[in-house]
Amino acid sequence: MENWIIHIIEQYGYIGILFLIALENVFPPIPSEVILTFGGFMTTKTNLTIGGVVVASTLGSVFGAAILYGVGLLMDIERLGKIVDKWGHILRLTKKDVDHANARFLKYGVWAVFLCRFIPLIRSLISIPAGMAHMKFSIFLLLTTIGTAIWNIVLIKIGAMVGESWENIVEYMNMYSHAVYALLIVLFIAFIVWLMKKKRA
Image (cartoon, rainbow, N blue to C red; front, side, top):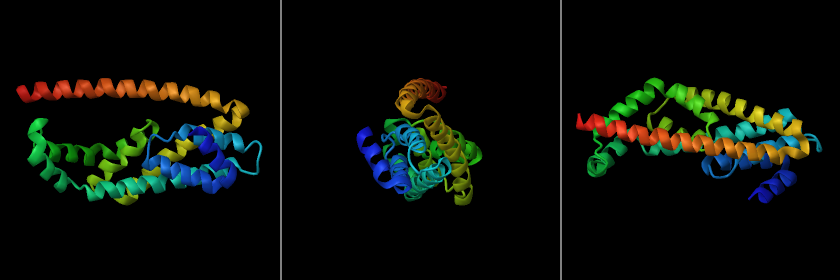
């Protein structure tokens, strides 16, 4: 996959970066670390500029996030509530639980949308609950743009600084991703245990 990403950037420049980042947001397994660090490296040997790569990648991120926000709107809270009413007993969930979670997201989701832009995989998926909760689209776009711009600037500048050693950064980012995934699994298990204890109580 890395060779394909590199080929697209080399062939299409800014448009290729925009396309790849938008695709990465909709299909999270595509590694943004490769796209951004290689894009940064390309600014040292082509006519691409750091500013241009930042703008292209941020536009791609926002476009992809908007698509997932739209998916969240289609899976609105009422539809999810109906699904939970029908199948929630399997996971011991009720519509009240869903409404409570939605209220929490509306209260704290502003920060979640921003902070999750720095967490691999979750950085893309957070757009779906934002849509489901009907978070104000202008606020969603603002926080998404700021969060993704920071993430993009950091990785692009690192790619430009390390030059041909950009692949080493990708390895470090993979280690970061694995550590985050492990932490998320632990937190998810802890949440399930807490939820079960609360239900029993």
